[in-house]
Image 1 (cartoon, rainbow, N blue to C red):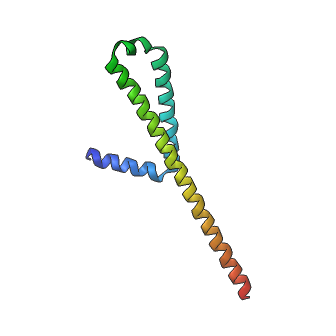
Image 2 (cartoon, one colour):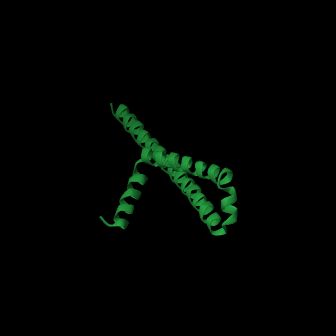
Length: 104
């Protein structure tokens, strides 16, 4: 299987499955927090001595943080959309029941 096709299929899975998306957010958050801790406590001097390594390391941390924020924002939008759909479905059911009760 080609790499772009695999990436597209994984992206679709994350978009459609809220549980998978939230699990991904959780694990990326854990990895990011661990990276920030390790980078600030244990790798501090080594990162300061090598500017490119410093930029790369904190760039990856920033990229993970941005990914978390984007996934969380998308999840928020998905939850709001599902709530609106459920509300419309309930309104349609109630109006249908009201129409049926008035017809009797």
